[in-house]
Image (cartoon, rainbow, N blue to C red; front, side):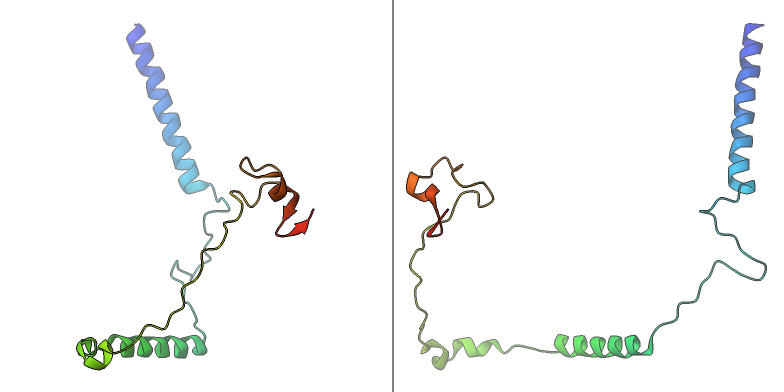
Length: 124
């Protein structure tokens, strides 16, 4: 008799869950479910600005032109390229800043008394 009673309780829970699901899926008109008036559909039409269409076409044309560019690598084998001189100026090493630039002054563990008393040459 106990098994029959448990089966009835289980069947009752299953039926209640089904009714609850059917209610929320079909009969409850919540704010998140769209309310369609007669003669409307889920398909919406997007209207584009003509200026956006023109800009898009110009962008695609420019992209096509860039894809068509080919670089002639033979210039790197030229004696003129080999004769170019490097005129760059080496940069001297600069002193490093604080370990944590956002820490309050004086909280650096490695800071000396003169470094913690000044910030970029200015007295605190």
